[in-house]
Amino acid sequence: MPPDERQRLFFALWPDTGLRQRLKQRLTEGGFYGAGGQPVPPDNFHITLRYLGWLSSAERRCAGQVAGNIRASAFQLVLNRTGYWSGSRVAWLGADNWPAALLDLNEQVQKGLEQCGLEPESRPYQPHLTYLRKAAVPPGPSAGYVPVTWWVDSFVLVHSVTVPGGVRYEVVDRWILTAD
Ligand code: 3AM
Image 1 (cartoon, rainbow, N blue to C red):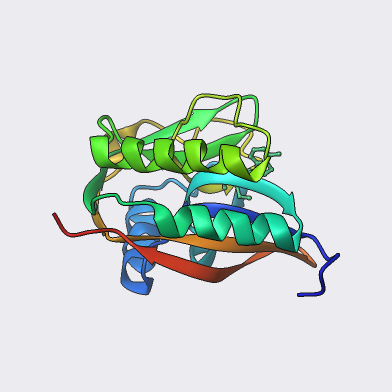
Image 2: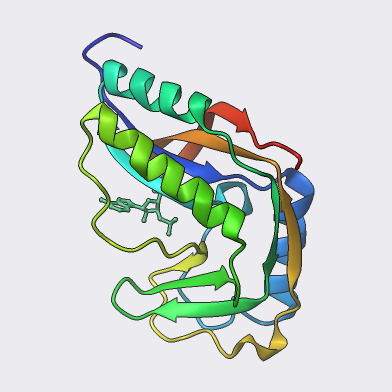
């Protein structure tokens, strides 16, 4: 990357291919695509850990060093509920209970990034997996949705590239979470 070229980046939890298909299948079977809106392509499914915005190469290097210094445990996520934010018109999958290990990972990321001179995230962390954008009405109660279990043993840095008709996400780095 040329030194002065900025990239739009974020840290995320990144499902593997099988999990992406399982999530899509559960959403389809539960009728959650029936209420209109713009489905997120399964290849783009993720849970944002921290949105970074447009970073210079030096900031990206710093963020990478922060990620490399993190010591956090792998954890199991049970995505057992759906939700909808009327402000952003986003429909999402979430959980009634988030593991302490995820919140610890998020905190380490937030704290570490302070040393990169990035603006701290002002909003509280609300983990979610967006599956529908521009949804005009809530897609329905969680009742028809069958929970999906996800063993999370890494997190990634993602480059968000605007393409005709949407966005393409490219994983540019990955860090392993410990097994304990
Ligand atoms: O995790 P989701 O897909 O809901 O909305 C953007 C997307 O959220 C969010 O970062 C994720 C990866 O693009 N995002 C985009 N711009 C943002 C901003 N300025 C933002 N989050 C916070 N501040």
